[in-house]
Image (tube, rainbow, N blue to C red; front, side, top):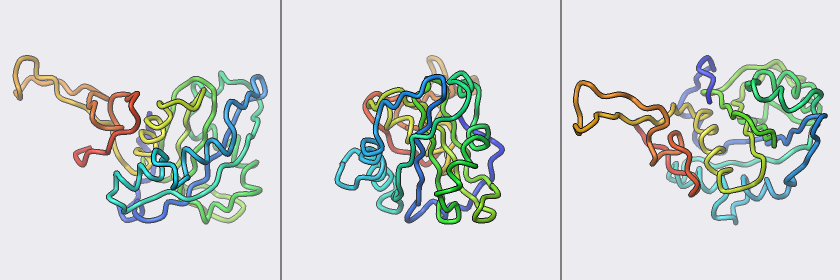
Length: 212
């Protein structure tokens, strides 16, 4: 999912080093920790891991962008996992910000990724949001990823929500029935199977297509 009311940023901000803070979050009713900080770091930031997210972003951007940063947590939030089933990035931030603001300099971070094992929807802001932090007024994008276990689907979910952070929309396709193209076509959301902004892929993340 995505938040259509986010602040859009200029494309130039999507190039170069993307300083990212990844936060592992669970809830008081189910404080499970199904993966470690080290495992998540390897999947996101490790340049020596050919299937890491940073290497995916490098490839998809023709070496124009990459991720650097660290993994924090676990942070246990009050309440239960049911909260996250209807919570978008804003609710996560309201609970998390007072905690992580103590050790993250948000003026140095361009991307915030929240990962929780709760099985629910994932969200990504389209571009960046503005928040008042201990370090001053900060602008950063937010993605909340619901990852019960570190499986192949992790790559697709991360690439999809991070794609919203890069201002990409959902990748649809036109269903024109028996016609190749026509005037009675229907746009099917998530229908593009060749783009991470479209249909769920069990074979890792696909490239972002320029049209979307």
